[in-house]
Length: 387
Picture (cartoon, rainbow, N blue to C red):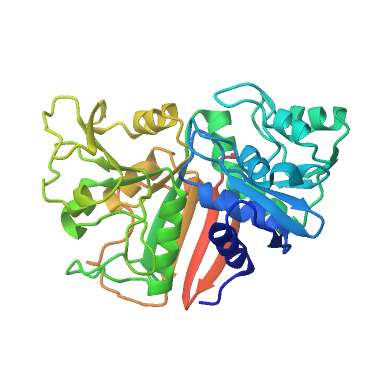
């Protein structure tokens, strides 16, 4: 795989330390890449990337740290030091402007002597929502909001889970699917590895890295023995997602499940009347309410929202996937479609449950995009909430 300009810059910074002056590529793109690196690891904070430019060189950069760490802007300014004075700060999201767990980033920007701030996206948090830009302008700092359409779209995607959580107090729930061209997830004998190609599977690992929590069901745990981690090209787990959630009404998760030996916490969701013992220190048991004899998924999603999680992905079998759809809990779909046909009425599809009684009531996607990945097709879209 060819080395990107951003990788060269990142490597140079890490090798030569905070005094490095990096060649200028696209500072706003670099800020967006830094935000992407933070995505999935910093909730309830939004992922933010920041870059300080002096003349024709990047002199400082940073990305959001988990609480109680620093915000991206303060890290970038600290790295740049005195070279911040008269420089330009590129930021993927409007700088934080109020005293919370962390002090206002606007104060640090003003104190550092930054002359211009380039940031395309207003913070959706009502505590900021333009106040950061106004504070900077009042201090005589030029604020530039213009960006290329693709840069603005990247910024919006990075903040979409944060914005959704602010509005609904729930995480943005994405349903990930992998099917054949005829809509099968396995053969009639249960063989499912692998429906999609290696490049698509690597994309899934990247999606896992960017999510705050991954939800699966006990059926998948028992049938596929998954690890449910994000792994690099060498198959090494990279510590994401930070939380994996197993929906297991009767508490059947075996003590030797492979996921138990991977990094990251596990929330084991069982019925209120089921007594289980956490098999490892990384497992927390949650005794959940039932709805019609099954885990109340609406309350589960609300629980994850109350923990400040912004992005949640569901990777599950037909029963749990169908239950999420039937309960109207899916906000976004990522469907990987392989150019294969299995056939056979006995081969399972991706959903069970009640489903739609008419096409008018079918789950419909909008703002749909598609990407070809070595022959597989990734279709992504948002569930239409309108009537």
